Every structure is written in structure tokens, then in C-alpha cells.
Amino acid sequence: MLSIIIFSALAIVAVVSGIAVFRVDSMARATYALAVSFVAVGVMLLMFDLDYIGVITILMMVMEMAIMAIYMIMFMGMNPALMPMSMVHNNRWSAILATGTFLLLAGGAVLVPWPARSGSVGTEDLTMALGEALMGSKMLVMLTVSPILFATIVAALVLANPRGRYDRWGDNLQRATPDDPQQGGLGK
Amino acid sequence: MTGEGMNQAWVLLAPVLLGAIALAGAALNGALAARAEGRPALSGSARPMLEVVRLMRQRRRVTVAADRLLWRIGGMALLVIALLKTAVIPFGPWILADIPVGLVWFNAMDVMVWAAIWLMGWGANSAHALAGGYRFLAQAASYELPLMFALVTPAVAAQSLRVSEIVDAQQSLWFVVWMPVAFLVFCASVLAFSAWGPFATAASGDIAGGILTEVSGVDRLLILAGRYALLATGAAFAVALFLGGGAGPLLPEWFWTLVKTLAVLAVFIVVSRRFSGVRPDRLAEVAWVIGLPIMLLQTLVVSIIVAVRG
Amino acid sequence: MTLQLVLVVAAALFCVGLYGALSQQVIVMVMMGLELMLNGVILAVGAFWWFLAPNPDGLLLLLVVIAAMTVEMAMGFAIATLLHRSKETDMTDMATELSG
Image (cartoon, rainbow over all chains, first blue to last red; front, side):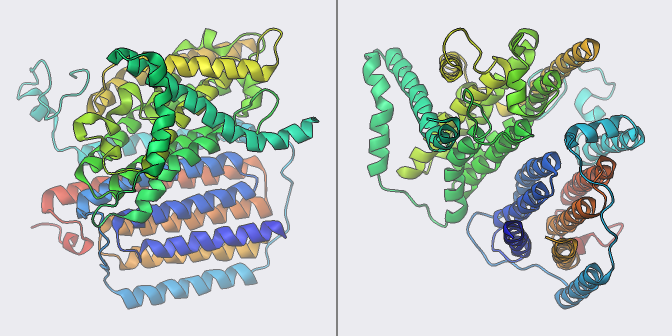
């Protein structure tokens, strides 16, 4: 009974703050409303015995929201004053489509006869078991995700960096120290 | 008292103890500042209490078109985060919440400090405060990866993420002996997430106080107390992770934990007065090009030792 | 706390995100809508894991979803930065032409 109450409270927090993302008057509030939604989902995952993944979700998402706030302000240049902002296109059809999708998914969730639970959680340390699965029997997942993440780092830097090699090191790549607007700590 | 009753009493005692340790740190800092100015040290160590009284009486400042909700949330968050961190730190045999992922919880809480300090910078609607908030985020992105690996290394050695098991795994040899790099990186990161010492550029004088520019009164008290509380809880966690927790001869475990925490906190405060402020943009390259590979090497060495030991 | 209740909540999060991703004009707000959708997906995957098959191998899907979310965020911000730098805009409607 208590778990249902806690879960319902968290669910209401998550959905209301999700709606608040698109309704509030300032970009920083939108970003941190999304952070609250993620923290609520992280705590819900904690209720499913997913300790490590729940806490990691909270960690990653708060970090991501802090960085996203920087991008928000950089692109939209707003000040902390609260100004009503509503920049939408095709509002009516988006709402209709979203509501339709919700009815479809929720109807499916309620009406589909889900199978019974197969297997039990067991008493072993779930984090240790997950790590051993990732590094042992399911190593292929790790092998696939690692180059994807590495390619993301490289691609994001390539796309976002305004200065290439020739801007920094000169036309013959001969300069001793790179010509950056702000020198790094090591002069590289 | 029985063990059960003491555990329940610890829930009430932990915040008081955290406040006392933070106050001790502030008193030491005040004494050192007074000595540096030529005044007697004792008057300096009384300054924190006098500041508390002064700030409680002071009027709260509100700026024009400030985002009050986010600003006050940011201000209150530092103390709350410090309290949540203490929940997983063992004090002798007592611990508030010995969750199986206590180490990751500690890391998650100090990421919340990112959000708190940025909110403080943003909410004040002041250019200097915003500059302070951005400085902190730049420095945070630099120290975070080395800190995560410094937290992972004791977990690898103890083969568990539970803080009490990490403390128990140090009964034969303290972790600081064979992972000194991780210890140093962790201590530097404690200074960094408390915005203290060389990493205090977010609140430094060259931007008129940074995040502390526009706050006054009880809000200022909460932020300053929050910084000291974060230092105190970081010192306590360093003791649990690297210095063997409550291990020590003769006296009970909680006494040794307290002594070691106070010693580490004193080292933090004394040593950080020696360093000038580190610029966040220069810190990024140093942390990622030098700090991260050294930290990875340390983790590799520890992993090899653990794998060979079986 | 049944599977149906959790899935309805996950569907709600997904559809709020869908509304945001479809209707917002600013790129960063579209990305926040996508994040909400993935939020719903993470909750749904966790619920399926707990209620149907709680063995550790199933958690790998959760990790892959989180990795996919990270990748999407990084690429989205990189593209938004590039768009802002070349066209001085952050609206999706201004990015509909390939050249000029």
C-alpha cells in the first residue's frame, strides 16, 4: 500500500514537471523542471530494486541539465526575468497526436494480457551481476557501445569546433604553441 | 543505550555533529586569517559565530527581476546536499542509510552541487553572479572525471559499492597506502566541489564575490555554512574511503573517525590557504591531459593487484 | 504497483515528450521533448524488467537506452551549435533549407 502511494506521488511529480517544461516562463525553469522529472523517474527505478541504475540516472541527468542550461542561455540569450514565452508551431495537431498516442499506449498497457513473472531477483548483488554480464557473456554489447560513444565524442567535437588544425597551428602546422583565443593550462 | 536506540539517536545527532565539525573548520579558517592579518588567533576563531549572529539579523536582499524560486532553492541546496551525503558515511558502528550503492550516492549528491551553484548564479539576475556560476561549471566538468575514477578505485579494491564494506576491506592495510593518487585526486575534488581554496574562483573577489555577490542575511549564511558543511562531509568520506574509517588502537571507532575527520579538514583548510586561485579554463586542459591518465593508471594498477590477488 | 500502472505513467511521460518534440520551435526545446520521451522509455524498460523477467541480463537494454540518450544529446547540441554559428538562429523552422 505504501509503495503504491509513494509511486503515485512520484508519478504525479514526474508527469507534472514534464508538462511544466513546456509551460514555464523561463528557460532555466524549463531545464530544471526536466531535471525534477528525471530525478522522479530515478527514484521510481530505485523502487524497482534497481539501485545502481536509479542513482546513476539521477547523477547523469542532473549533470546533463546543468550543462543544458548553459546551452539554453547561450542560444536564447534570456535573462532571469520571467517573461511569458510560447514558441510553438502546429500546436493543435501536436496535442491531438500526443493525446491519441497516449490513449493508444495506455490502452495497450491496460488491455494486453502480460505474461507472468519468470524468474526472481535472487539475492546476489545486482550491480555485480550486471557488471559480470556486461564484461562476460554479453561483452558484445560493450564492444558495440564503446565505439559508438567514442564516435559521438569525436563527431560532436568536430561539429562544434570552429577552429581546425590549420587555424591553430598555422598553414604548415609548424607553430610551436597553438594560436587559441584562450590558452589552455598546458600550452598544447 | 542499546544499539537500536543509538542508531535512531544518530539520525538526530548526525546533522548536529556535521554542523559542529563545519564550525570547527570555520573557526580554524578564521584563526588562520586573523594570524595572517596580525590579530590574535582566538579573536579570529570566534569570528564564525559572530558572523552567524550578524547574518541572522541582516536584512535579506532582493534584486530586480530575480528568479526568487530558483535563487533560494540554490542557496538552500548546499546544506541539504551536505546532509544527504552524511547519510551514507559510517560513524563508528552507526550509519544512517547503508545503501548498497553508497559510493554512487555520494557522487550523485556532489553533482547536485553543480545545479545548486549554477542556480545561485542565475537566480540573482546579476552579471557577476552568473560569471561565478559559469566558472564553477567549467571547473566542475574538469574535475568530475578524475573524481569518478578516484571513487571507483576503492570500490574495485573492496569489490563493493557499499561504504561500510569499503571500510571493512581496509582492516589489513589502509587504501591510502597503495592508492595515493586516488586519495590526492579525491581531496582536490572535495576542495573543488566545495568551491574552496584554489578552486574558489566561483566566489572570488575579482568578480565581486561571484555567487556571493547579491546574497545577504540568512541566505548568505546558508551558502557559507553549506560550503563548510561540504568540506566537512568530504573529509569524513575521505576518512571512510582511504584512511580506514574508525580503525585505531584502544579507543572506540567513532572517536577515531572523528579525530581523523578533523585532521583531514584541518589539512584542507591550512593547505588551501597556500594556493592562489586556479583559473577554470586552464584547469580543464591540465585535468584532462595530465590528471585523467594518471588516475586511469592508478585504477589500472589497483585492478591488476586485485585480479592477481584473486 | 502493478505493471499496468507503471506503463500508463511511462506512456504519459512519452506523450508529453512527443507533444514537446512535435510542437516546439526552438531546437533545444525539441531536444528536451526527446529527453522526456526517453525518460518514459527508461521507466517502461525498468518496469518490464522488474515485473516480467528480473534477471541481470535484461538490464543491458536499460544501459543501451541510457547510452543512446547520451549520444542523441551530444549530437543534438553539436548540431545546434553549428546551426547557431552559421545561421545565427536556433529555430527549427529556419533550418528547413539545405542551402542559403
